[in-house]
Image (cartoon, rainbow, N blue to C red; front, side, top):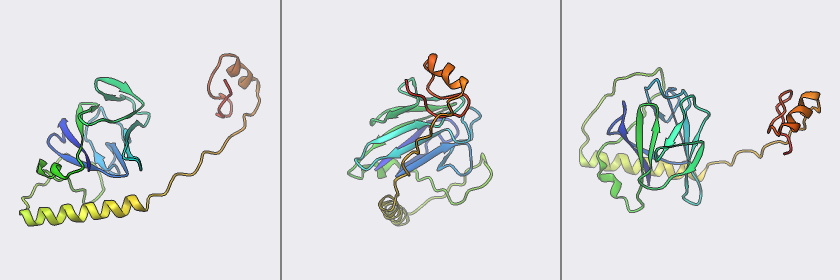
Length: 184
C-alpha cells in the first residue's frame, strides 16, 4: 500500500492512500483536496503504475511541485520523499506488509462539493476500522483491475506557415500558429 502523509499545511496529520491515479489540488473534484492558496485547482497527479512504480506529475501548476527540495515536472517517488505544494508538504510512504495501518488516521471523502476548511472527526472502534480498511482495499483492487489505458496520442501535422519556419529556425518545440509539434 502506498500513502501520502500530510506533514504541514491544512491537512497536517492526515493519511491518504494512493491507488491508480490520485489527483491533488484545491478543486472539490480532487482526490486530495488541499485548501491552500499556493495550490492550483488541479495541481499534481500521483500515478501508481502496473509495475508498482509511483510517479508524481505536476499539472502545469502556477507555483510548482517540489520533491526533495527540488522543483519537478515529473519524477518517480521513493519511500521517504518529501513533496511540497504551496504551504503544504507530504511524505510518500510505501509498505507492502500492511504495517501502515498503525498510522491511525483514515481520510474519507464522502462527497464532492465546494471547498470547506472544516473537517469532521469521529472515533472508530477497532472492528469498524478493520472493516473500513478491508472494504477500501477491496474497492482499490477492483478499481486498479478495471483501469483502462489512455488512448495513444494522435500525430498532428504542422500547418507549414511562415511562423512554423521561424519556429523551426529557432528550434522551438511547437508551431506557434497551429500548436503541432515541430521536428528538432
